[in-house]
Image (cartoon, rainbow, N blue to C red):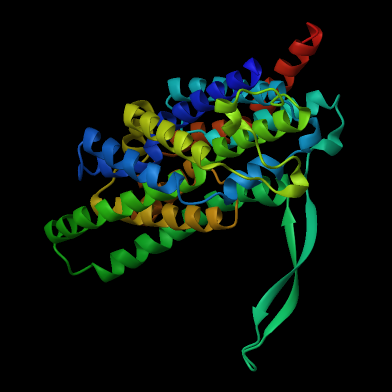
Length: 377
């Protein structure tokens, strides 16, 4: 029981760190363009992150049951994975590098589960294909008919492929959106452009904050729900006092789906909002000032691009790196202005952090589990 509570606390610590580590995703551009003060931007990001976090559970389901075999997941395994993710997040935050909290969490969970399974690689769900029957409306007759569809899940389609495609989409769409704005606004005076898009950026940054909460906060929800499923299945909650029965999970295995209780959603959302309010000024400086000089129209283009990509991914349960998407969107917007406008040496530092996140955190999670086994825990 104490271990379960420890897992929940550490998961919420991760969520808090995720909040201030990824604050820059939502507000770096709106701060850099001086549309809002840093404090105003942080408050808005906290509110919109909270709203987004309470608005879905598809990503939580992917994290909780779609990446590893839950039969090998224990509270200790989850704890070790979280510790790996937290260590990497703090290191990259200290260095001012906008790395992915999502990939840090996923890497830690995969590495710790692999160690718990004694190097049995089959516990990692690289690719799973499932068929299911759904009801659709026949457009000619208006009648409901059965249709078989195929779905793919697992680490490859949900994490690895989006890890590469989402930044590419961010750059390309950001470049196109900014290019179109340049064409449409070519006869506008700079003062009018700044005035109009200063207001429009309030909406785009709020949308970005909502999308960030919709995707990022759900990852910790999935981890906590997974811990409760593991504890319930093992009988750890059999003798709980009645006042703590809310901890029990109604699901007893991956085959029964992943239920995320309302209290988990609320606690995770509030924790991320608190972390967001604490701010992440080191990363804001990198994204909003060091990489490319931004004006309100650039901020609007980058935030709209990133929020759209993240929103679509969240709908399909893809635990996307919001950091990768907004960073790449800023690159695309900057490149539309001029290739030389992007400070590529800063981009290079970020790319190395992106590449190493999953392997390093997987190694940490793996190592922590091995240490526990070494000491007989």
